[in-house]
Image (cartoon, rainbow, N blue to C red; front, side, top):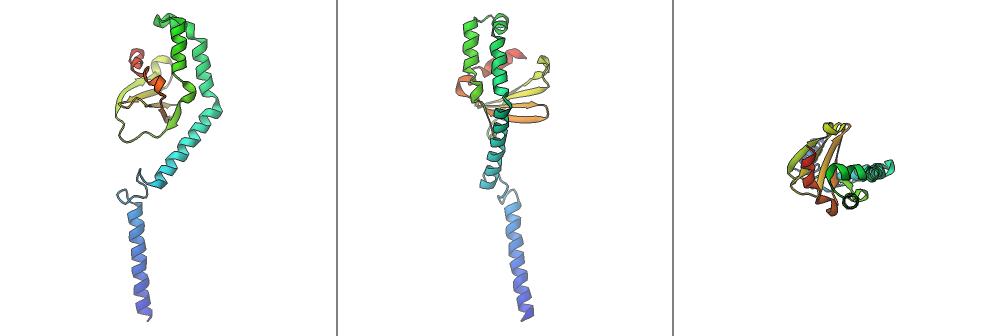
Length: 159
């Protein structure tokens, strides 16, 4: 009886190990991107990043800096002050949010910030609703508001 019970328990242990192995492998699914647990982890990370960005006040700082330099921007670009102010409003800085970059997004261009005294890189994609910023050892992908997407092609002029 003990031998039969031992074999039975051994088979159950093997089945459990096989199931755990299937769950853990990339093909099996526990850690695949489309798995609910992976999605939950990504959503939690993104939520924490957005909370930190909002708490830091960096969006307000960026918006204030652009507004305070709008005259300089107008002179440098040849645009009118009104056009610059409109462009700053269209950037909708308050509406930018961190997100998870989909696997289907293909990079189209990267812009190095060293030319402007910033140690970082900005990457655009074939889908204009995504931009990735790498700076200060961090990488964050942003969901770009529709009104700001129209300005992404102008990034090439900064290079």
